[in-house]
Length: 64
Image 1 (cartoon, rainbow, N blue to C red):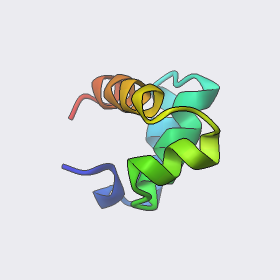
Image 2: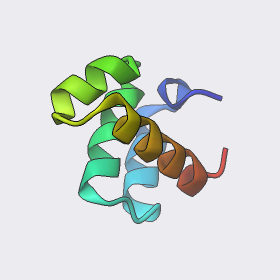
Image 3: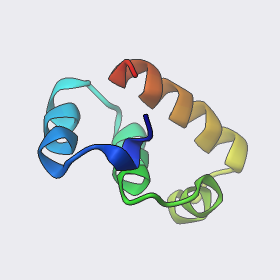
């Protein structure tokens, strides 16, 4: 399942319950809008490799 497949109530619940760091939460919100990882890296002002690492941590915390 992709993060963009979550409903907005699910997104809000996961933001509240998953104990995301600020960077993870920002990435989670961008991915909920189906933003590509390369664009996320630009918007977060980090490398694609950093976004990839954050994305893996977000997916681990979500548990899907």
